Length: 260
Length: 260
Image 1 (tube, rainbow over the protein chains, first blue to last red):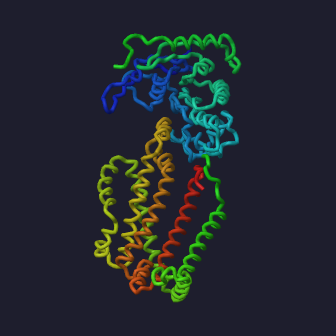
Image 2: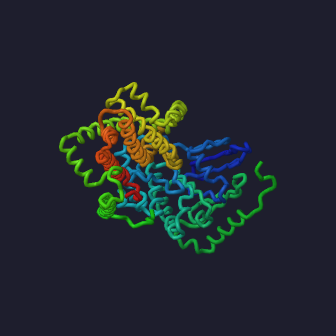
Image 3: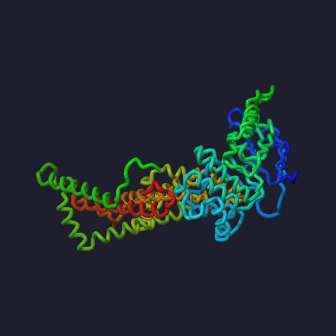
């Protein structure tokens, strides 16, 4: 067992609906440990709170209960987010978008640009620094999105369905690219997705979640050898993992799990 | 950005504009020459042209235009200098919003023309009163449009700054400001139109100089040729301003390929 990069205990997120004042439990009591350097996917249907959990870890949302401990390195940000839609600023060039995370941390724009450049190359966008987002394909926009998070050099990378809006082919390519980049940087990754094959292909562990209320129902260790090529998806072992996770998702809800 | 219509070149735009203009002028002249249209009502292009030569030769026209020009630019510039920052502040800072929005909404709801007699009473018949009217005419359009722009900033863009730990001030400078630029430009365009209306109404109601005064004084003496000349000049000024703002718009919106 390596050291824990992230440890969540009893995390809960409750919303109050504006009109009815009904309470909506988006996340109920999540416990999760993520080992340093590991790739963990949160897999579940929409509404299971997987993105909400990620935003809580990131600090965009404040949990209504529970605690998250992150091993601090004492320098820079502990985590950085790769957003779902290519959330790039249309008024910035690729270079300025990628440098933006550092600018948020108080680094001067000039210095940030200098430090962003190698990450643009790393994600395969070399030569596109001066382009604007509208000039990039969806896959390239997500590469820039990833480069922005990598540039702040956080120990933990949070990825919120980053390939959800890409076509199937580009998505596969990006999955392989992500593994290559992960291999080069050795970040701890918490990856949110609703695609079983994506989760199995990428991860050391797939944490299966269910909705209403959002909770963890299973934690599956993926013991496929690394480095993984895309054709691992056509092996019986891979299919076995997919089936096992599929059956876990299909399981009937335990009694009393309906929303209050 | 799909284009429903093929883009027209500047040359084509000018060509079609000139052709329709020439057709209207020719039809007008022909209608008066043939007696279909009474000369006393709308005058005729050839007479307007003759009058234009006389009055520009004597300098009368230039003097009036110079007065209107000053009233317009001073009032309009002040409306931009105050309207844009105030719109930004009200849009970004809830406290400023609460303090000002009621007051401004009330003032905005009052038709500007209703204020002209009072403004003339306070500031007299000269430049100052016109500048005030022009300012009031343009100010609200500029401010309200800028305000709308700030309020329309995409949540997901603001989340990026927050996610990377950027300050509110940084979010304002790097997100709210650039994303409201298109709105500010719209506000400027609408404001310029209103300012022109302000110049005309104030000069026609109470003035001793300016192009609006030239129109009303000419009409008083049944000199329709000169009245029409003034009207046409106002139209031409409006056109030139629109074109100028379009150029500014292009310059500031490199990241928006849909503007041409």
